[in-house]
Length: 210
Image (cartoon, rainbow, N blue to C red; front, side):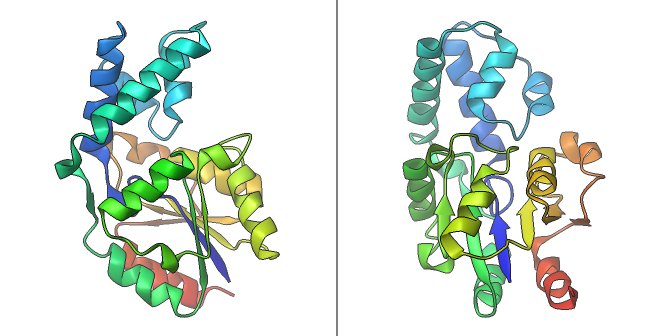
């Protein structure tokens, strides 16, 4: 059985880290969103958020904002931490199942984050970032790539946002959504196949799946 995991907000508590860094990067480039606007787009790639905030913006400007965002967030790592049960649950699951990481972080950024929080990359059979595919989540390309590399169908997509639900549906896999992301987005999660409060509930769901 293959289980794909999102990273931000699912395995790692990144809400404050991402929110503050995005707002600072956008403000630096003359775009002044409210927190509500950011939460309404939560789970989209930062590039797509920028396009929604400023339609018609040039790619060069998007790249500049993204670079500023990465510089800001990686200079402030004290806000970055694993959720309480992440390491224990992943170690339990990795004994019996193949785990994959699929994230809308760039591949190199993804590896950097895993190193910062000291999460063993060997837990994952496949690690895929948005720079590894043509279309990031909520398109199913990251899951499709995981399936191609493992030559087997993915069974579950574990995430924390509506984008993860859409990704699972597009790839025709079951979604397990953890209410670990911002409370402001919980109302958008009702279409999940399984909605849980904590990652520690997942091993039982997987074990009982037929």
